[in-house]
Length: 139
Image 1 (cartoon, rainbow, N blue to C red):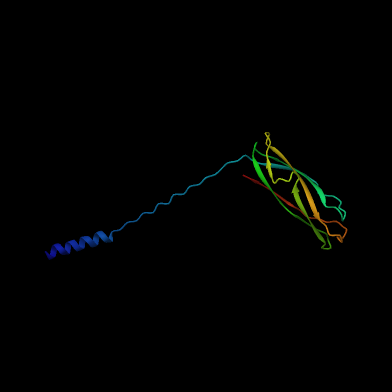
Image 2 (cartoon, rainbow, N blue to C red):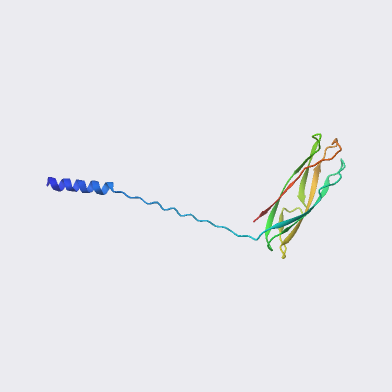
């Protein structure tokens, strides 16, 4: 009886100490392939401003992509400064007051850009230089 009890305890210890584990990880990835996009700029990079100028035409950007594709246009202000440290800003805007553009049937879309200047009445005359950013975010 003692031998049977000892064998049962040994068998239980053997069974309880032999534990195996397994972990399974599954990942899922999705991607959407879109047609390539190219852009051609006809922007105005040099113009004269007077102290009472508020609006300027910045030109146009034509984007070529797949037909009926929608994109959002994100514009960031231009900070212009001269050699003496005088500065002002131009806030670029889309001409049609919509920041969403839809490609035509041939895949092209032309976006007209304007700008609103923030010139002080005591702004120093001179040559100013700067840049603005245009981002096309496709949905």
